Image 1 (tube, rainbow, N blue to C red):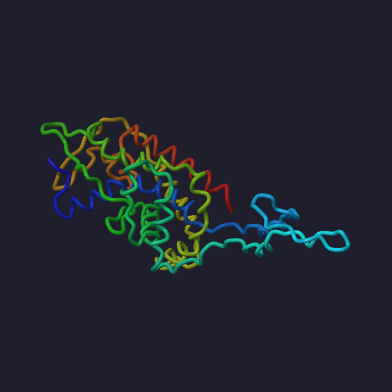
Image 2 (cartoon, rainbow, N blue to C red):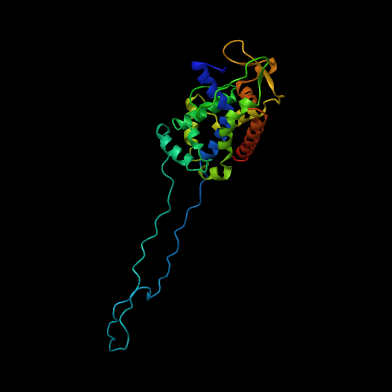
Length: 284
């Protein structure tokens, strides 16, 4: 028994990771936000070179002059001028940003074998779209940030239909991925891509709002997910399973997805959300 078929199935697969994706989006905010101005790097002072270098065999000494003084000793070749400080490459255009973003993202120490879960096309726009929709209590199937779940949702035949442990393991690779890179590894890239995120956010119709504020709003909505007791009873009035409890079924879609993660996974996601929210609200 499967949760969806054809297009409905694909939509739920993307929705199935959306709550976990928001943690990635928080992490990506650290990756893709603008850098604070750094003090100019001063060139190192020239290093004095001894008048005579003994490391290599020297030519025979020149004859001593009548004044009893040797000719000018051999000196080291002149040192080249110090190279100027390396500057960050020019920020790419939003439409051409995927190559650089992918390179910097995948260079981090993600858990081995899980980095292929990233979708590496239209990365910054997809991030902004997902954050905007989650903040509004919605889930969208298009423009995913992570690959869809490989394992389909299924329930044992019979009554009642219960959401329980066998369903929760599908999300573990995504949570392991998100837990594998701490903020300290993300900070070197902090703030680089904020102008592009703002551009993508303005394209959605928010020219005068900060993307960072919408990200915090999305986190707050997920953290407001009510605590429930598992297992949870489901119903299947049509193709899609729904929660039998009307109070749960009426929750915003991202909060219902948090509940579908299961108690242990949800606890981990909450901890990550709280951690990154604290980081976001502690910076200007």
